Length: 304
Image 1 (cartoon, rainbow, N blue to C red):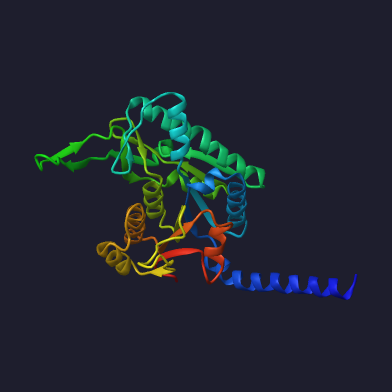
Image 2 (cartoon, rainbow, N blue to C red):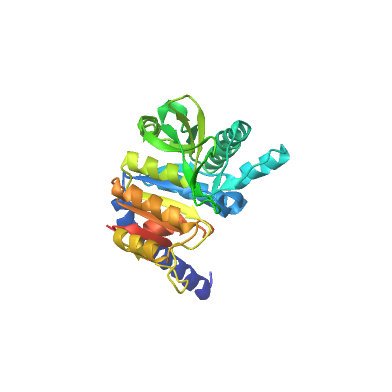
């Protein structure tokens, strides 16, 4: 081995030692704690990012953290509906879900995508169990009602979105049973109403409700943007709950980021210590956010 080779190796060893030194206090901070991760967007559709995500989740479990995965699947649902020639419309950002559509939604989410994630985790050495919100009474859903003002009469009309719901009650017993068995829960955001009907639930909303029910240490929402941006388009790395509300009221937080921030705030108000909106397209985004000081997205709530 040449002197240059030895110096190169020593440099690499020092970098590794520095990384471990930075990560160790955070590993201890989250030991035996639960983190809920909403997995979706581009990261779920990219094979390499999906593999890295699975590896990261397994690493969290190996260092003593309890990861709980809640996944979306909008693009995959849309593709299957197109293949089956089933018309699907959106109202106020929510997919109108009739009986035929909800059957496809359940098939894609609780079937194909859910088991694909479970398989990915197994391929990198982890052990996961795939369930939906219908299993074990996990999510009792209530039908969502939306209104819209008629542009001609100015009268508010009730919009029927079909089988679109939101969590009315979350019983985390089945998740706790899975995590106590040293397994990783992977959850499809499907719920059942008190009427026995199946409801499609937004994955962010489901993740927030599950995080609250588990009293999770952190809620992570993986998305396709860097996080919350300020008026100049720069990333805001940390926000108090109050500041997040102010930015929403002023219009700085807008568009699709509004419901994500609202989900984070609702989870924090329900007892989750903090929530993070981060770019799932960034390799190892969750690890960077948990184990490094600079993080990888926008943290809302207490950093402690």
